[in-house]
Length: 112
Image (cartoon, rainbow, N blue to C red):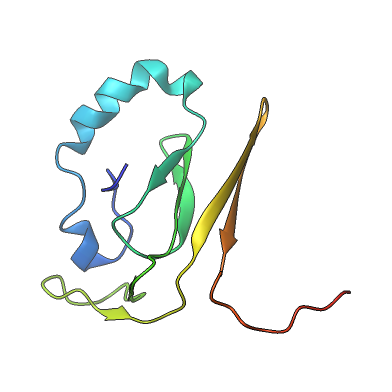
């Protein structure tokens, strides 16, 4: 999905979240036992959690990020150039794993 159907705590983005989220929930509720995870975009910020018993994740954007301003202006979206990232998802019969990959990170790799 693109727009999340719930508030994230970032007021400027919550104002433009998915319309009719209750209707969306009514549609998916009968299938809840088959929904393993929800993936969202839109917010350009890594956010993970659980909505009505369904786990979700949201990756950073590839261009810019929405700043973490939990008490910010509702009418203006604060952004920054935190590093981009993408997600790598592995699935098995009993598990969903989401890795956040900072592909632009140039820090030295070493062994522990």
